[in-house]
Length: 236
Image 1: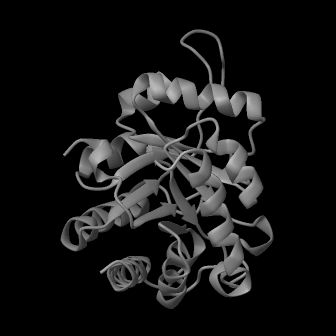
Image 2 (image 1 turned 90 degrees about the vertical axis):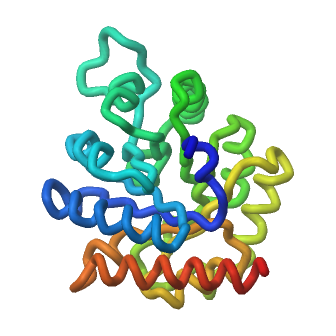
């Protein structure tokens, strides 16, 4: 199936950050691939760059994203993440402008254009509905809007500030209705996943709630089932 055809809500993004790598990351990716196939839910996994080729080679159903990409071209740029190298490694896309790796808007616009030129998908982070609306003008594939103050707190966005979800979707869709809008922050449990979908999000994602769980694979499965059930409940 073409990559773009897999981008149907609901989607679920798992950012590994620096928590899992090597064999542990590959084991989680294989399980995510199986769950994605069995549940019919699109999963985006963001491993460490060094793990990206192995995970891309070992999976068929998930979308493998880089955690960052620079708007550089082939040539100079020591230490930069080259878009062509990501493509060659098997990446389907990249995350951009994460709160732990913010990008100036000029560089962000250039990075999105570079990704588009190579057929790489883009998931761009925004820390407010208003910023999401501005970023929508750059036409990324997806926007993840989440308030940094809630990230990692265990205080779910769906309960703490549900208006953030509806407002971010409204402002993005006003600019470009084709952009898929993610919302996250503070998600700890499968119930939190369901709540954020019921509040109007098209997609969501987590890091620590899965990678720091006693059984990350079991927790991931429970969250994906909650995602699927909540979506079917709200979109009969």
